[in-house]
Image (spheres, rainbow, N blue to C red):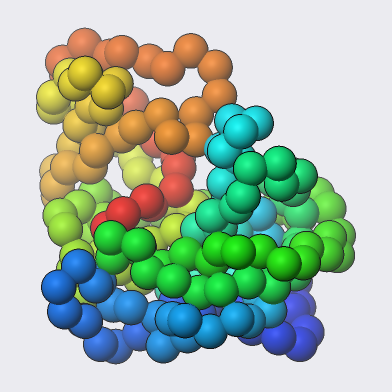
Length: 196
């Protein structure tokens, strides 16, 4: 399914970067510090009424297509599947590109679906890297994983496939967060790449 975005920018326009950056930067957006209008489809909403941040994504790109939306308290968050146009400031926060200070939100349509990009763990593991950064903020699916380290004090655990390992956390999870035992097998895990 192809969904056309007309006018303004897409998350791909904001995210794509060939420059590594310095210090805490990790492929910073060329739009950092600018107030822009961006259109995309909501892929995940944090289930916290006081802090309901969300992610949205360009529906037609497989890389550099997702962005984190940092919102103020009291913001009426959209639903997963909403195509929205936002106006706000582009910033970098600990190496992650985000949009904040949202001044306008327009819902263009609802019930839009985005298929997760299927990846191997090595493509999203490690710190800032040229192979992981293109998936920052994107909805992805990893397959055939086993738990290689059980939960830490914050409920995060590590899952591995034959290529590498990823940290799995409950930032966007709704329901009872699993506390799997070592070597528990998962056919797949789907979520957003947050902090590469």
